[in-house]
Image (cartoon, rainbow, N blue to C red; front, side, top):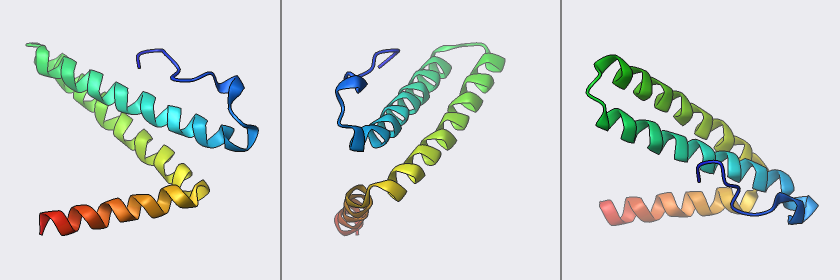
Length: 93
């Protein structure tokens, strides 16, 4: 993503706007995690690596915050997340 908004938020139906904002927050945090972890894997500087991995860990907490908000607001999302969990459990048993 890196500073690009996937869609124009001004064109989103107002009743779905907050959920889309939350989803964009999730996308941004996941992108940040990937970026920091990739940079940590590339650097030879151990202090820089520690900082990058620590920041990535903080971004994972942010993912949890946005996901919690989304699941509270979008019943279908919560149901589908649970269905996905069940499918993985069935496949991996």
